[in-house]
Length: 111
Image (cartoon, rainbow, N blue to C red; front, side, top):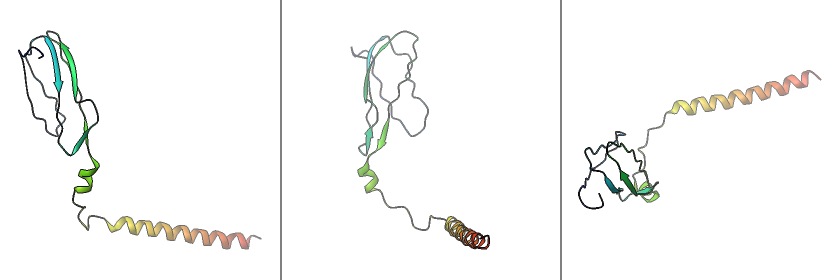
């Protein structure tokens, strides 16, 4: 609260549950969030708010991982891919090639 009568600090986690700060007195508040070093904000990190008695206010703040953190992260472990998709892809290619050859011969017979 801007006059210093009320102040609250909370830590967030990766759950989607809202953080509730109850029994705040009426007044003008500055709500500010901090994000980890490896993130960039996607919305404003600070907002002014005039709070009235009995009022509920929901604020959304956002951040996304920055490219440097992505580049610094370890590569994915090898062997995590399934060979099934490769086999299905090769099968589709062979089926397409076979259908093309069949249609080429069928169109020659019809002439």
